[in-house]
Length: 296
Image (cartoon, rainbow, N blue to C red; front, side, top):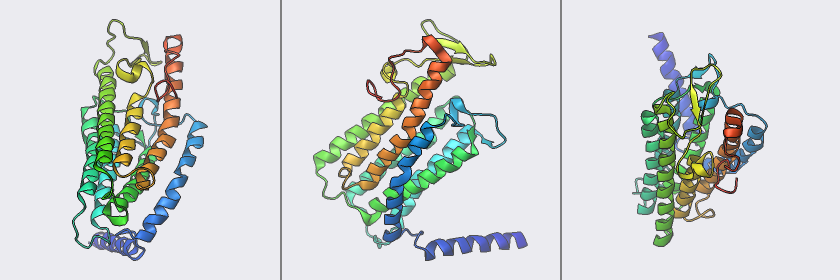
């Protein structure tokens, strides 16, 4: 009973701290502070470029700090829509007022992406390599900040009510196209895992060093032009989301999301390109870019 009382008291103290400091609910002052410092996230790009250390997925390592792959992914990604929705509906400026229809639509797009990303995608995956605890924690931190930044804007600190319908339509179409592209190319990667160690005619494959796994070069769709078309598709998706909300000036948190995604996913794509070229040697297509077809 003493332990329960201690935990209850600790939770109450934490909640009181968050409320008294304008974090829950998120005040406009603290929201502006988040945006100010969120812009510095791009500094992770040069740091990531200096190292190939990324202990998750095909570059995961053996460690006592590893977490079950699917469990880690689902939990860390659910943080984003949960934070977004909480920040929207606890916004002090709302005072019980209904959200504008344009904001409801943008919220729907955001949650649709994360339903696919955090629930459907990991459940469809035949398997997922373990995730290191440091990646898990950093992903949660990213999603907390990003969900708060965009949720604060949608909850009342920004407005998409004056965005022309044609712009909403164009941005939404880009979003849906990007979502489809992301799902399509991820399914190609799933098919490789479903095949296990079977190698079909025409496939380029090499055996892992321990002889337990076969690695294959993905084929189909934009894989003909880049190694990570699912990353590129996601960038198209969130660019469309930003456009539907009024563009980079009006919908600043969404623009920062796009830039920060590129800052962290771009170096990972370059790392992945090096991994494929090292693993497959002369068999790897040399004209295949990392993430943007024909460019980068």
